[in-house]
Amino acid sequence: MKKTLLAVAVMAACASTSAFAGTDGLYVGLKAGVDIWGVDTSNDYRSSFYRQYDYANHQRKHTNQAFTNDMDRVNATGGLFAGYNFNDYLGVELEYNYLAPMKMDHSHLNYKVWSNSFGLSGKFMLPFTDDFEMFTKVGVSYNYLNSNFSKHVDLTNLLLGGGLQYYFTDNIFARVEYEWLHNMGSKASALGIRPDAQLITFGIGYSFGSRAAAPVIAPAPQKRTINETRTLGADVLFGFDKFNLTQTGQETLDNLVVEINDQNIEDRQVSVVGHTDRIGSAEYNQKLSEKRANVVANYMSSKGLTPDVVEGRGKTEPVTGSECDGLSRSKLIQCLARDRRVDINVQGVVTEEVTE
Image (cartoon, one colour):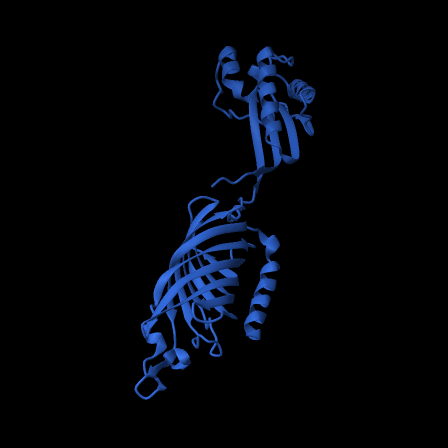
C-alpha cells in the first residue's frame, strides 16, 4: 500500500515539472456505465449468516453453500470526474464512483452490498491525432463499502484504468473508460468478502482551457546574394547629345529607386556607370558619359537612394560591335542607340521568407 502511494506521489511530482511546457488546464465530467464485481469464493466468511437452525436437534449447523455464489455480479454505476492536464501527456484526476447495490439472495434472505469510491490517479496520455487520444490511469481509491446486514468497511487500495478520448471541440470531449478497483473489502469485516470491481463507463466532459496545439515552426528565412544590373537607354533619359533628364527619364528613375528600396537589401552597393556611342572624340564622349552618370546619381540621391560609385566610361565599352559599320550618319545614330546607356548595378544580400 505504501509503495502504491509513493508511486502516485512520484508521478505527480514528475507531472508538475512539466506544468510550464504548455497546458490544457482544468476539466470536469460525468460518466455512467456498468460495474462487474468479482469475488474470490475462498474468502467467504462463515458467520451466523451461513448457519441454518436444525429444529429437530435443536442446534445450528453450517451450510455448504458459498455466500458469494448467490451474488449478482453486474449492475449499474455512475460518477463524476475532474482533473488537470499539465500538457499533452501528463495530468492528474479525481473521481467519484457509485456502485449500485449488488443483491445476494442467500438462504432466501435479501442481502445487498454497495460502495462509494473516491479515486486519485495520475493520468498518462498518448495523442493519436489533434482530436483523438488514448490514456491510462494509475492511482489509489478510497472505498466506502456498505451493506444492509453489516457495518461499513473503509479501505484504500489500488486503482488502474485506461480508455480512449475524443474532442468534438476544443472544450467538449467524450471518453470510453475501463477501471479496476482492487480488494474493496476486508476479511475481518462482517461482510467476509474482498470484491474487485471492474467499471466500464461512457463519459462526457468539458475542458475550461484549450487543448495544446502542436507548435507551428515557420521555415527559416533564406538569404540570397544579388548582383543585378539595370540598363537604362540614354535616349530615354536624355535628348541626343544632352545630359539633362527628360520627364520620361525622371519617371523611369523614380520607379527604379522605389523598386530598389523596397527590396531591403543588406550591405547594399549601388554603382552608376555612363556610356556613349562611338560618334565623336574619346575625350568628348568621356566627359559626356561622366556628366550623364552624375546627373542620374544626383537625381537618385534626391529620391532617397545615394549611389556608392559614379563613373563615366565614354565609348570604351560598346555593345553593338561592328554591326553598324558602313551606315550613313542618320542610320548610324539609330543603330548605335544601345551603346548610349546608363548602367545601374545593385549588389547585396536579400532576405526572403520561405512559403510552403
